[in-house]
Amino acid sequence: MHKGDVNLMKYLGYIFLALILTYRLPQNPYSIIQNIIPPIQTSNGVLYLSGIVPIILIILGTTGLFKLERFSGQNNIFIFIVVIVLIIPLMRWTLDITRTAYHLVRDDGLKAIDIEDSNISLSGSDIETIIKVNLELKNYSKKDNIFKIRIYYPESIKKHMDKNFYEFDGYHSTHGRRNKINIEEKIELDLDENETDELFESEWFWEDIEYELYNDDESIIFIQPGI
Image 1: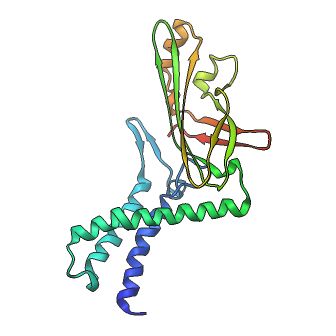
Image 2: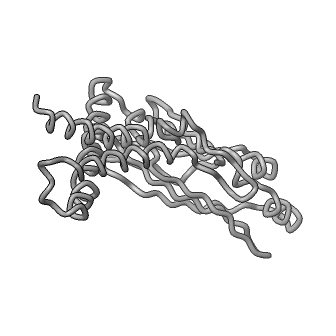
Image 3: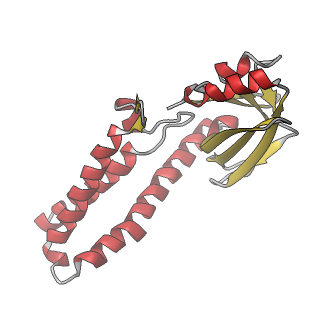
């Protein structure tokens, strides 16, 4: 193989490795690199040191492409745009296809679903206290799934409730081939004024939250860490 081809593969490999490290594992809230270097909770927020490694790899890969003789007549800005707009999305698509193939071989049902994004917020007044939940689910299999959803309250909320979980209304369904759905739910909490004040003064948002997707055949649990 020509030396220029070897270097091209090497620099593209740096970028691909960065994407692999930032790819989330199935039913895991963290990427591969975040499982190796977990986020650190500080007094001012959360510190993600894990992001440094993929950034360095992408910089090494992109600047390496700038130096290749085959691209000597190209503007570096153009090469950078190609990397961002074409190469990286294509590599991510390759990873998604690989994951779909993995679930296809295993004939996974609910296990092929992942929570791409989740957001929970708390609002209140003298009249009511409401939890708003937003979920984005992605189905990596090639078949549809029908299921129900439960959210298990964090400890600071759980102690004010009769049950430790809330059942979302109705059934939900996802379509295969990496299609996404967004689910929104409002949970009204029956709290008195003192309980509401205590809840807002707590640090419930740093606590783990569990989501359960289930049907008659199977059940899976997603843990969304407070950090």
